[in-house]
Image 1 (tube, rainbow over the protein chains, first blue to last red):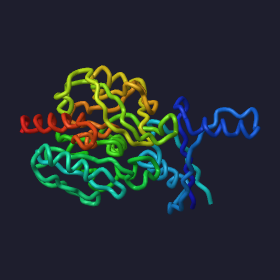
Image 2 (tube, helix red, strand yellow; image 1 turned 180 degrees about the vertical axis):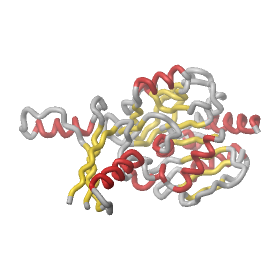
Image 3 (cartoon, each protein chain N blue to C red; image 1 turned 180 degrees about the horizontal axis):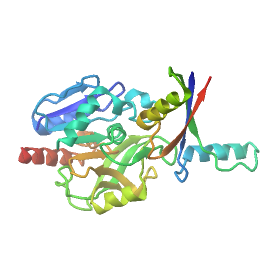
Image 4 (cartoon, rainbow over the protein chains, first blue to last red; image 1 turned 90 degrees about the horizontal axis):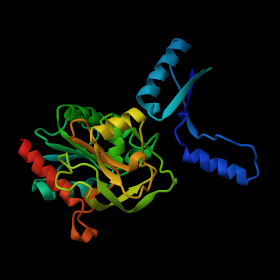
Length: 80
Length: 224
């Protein structure tokens, strides 16, 4: 199966890159855009007996490496 | 003082650090490749140098912090060993859990490469004992991700414990509390963004970083 991890900055953590994107969108004429947050997506194939098992392993990966939980949050999707 | 410098792919201040350490200790500095799992015996100090370890992939210092040698470095620190991390080395120490908080992208989003003015935050550490409190130094910085951030509880633990070693007098990167360098609870680990090893000889433009290494060497020798 395939796992997709999305990592973004925690609420309340200033995101200067998100702000720069928001400014650029504004100058292109896209109006009403607010709270832009930049993050990253990490995808990989994983061998597991069940979705739950895969989800557990991927969460462990997030805690240990993929996200810095001091400033970031993550979400895990298991795809087929 | 017996010291070693850890080298990762992408480290680029490792030799400058080794020169600084060898100069104050009068002994050769061991260079330790990240794939090793054991440290040389009878070490007093480990330095984690600046650079762009593993291309800054994922997050600065994140991959390096999980390299095989780092398990030995964390054990060394837990046993009371001295660990100095500069720039990328500070990022690696934070990612390895040796120091609290996080280092984010500079608020200006720019890579900053210039001398900055720093205030000595505490003289109660083996690294800063040679300076005087509130002394102003000039040291070079060269980083993209030096914006120090931590939750309120961590920040008050640092402040109440007198663990801020250096502060910027004019904040270049957005760091909370103008923090440029912090100490571990036992005061034997120091992580800092500015580069003391680039300010130890007349030819460097100034020698404000030299005292850090000489007071460290004096302390380490006294503790032995």
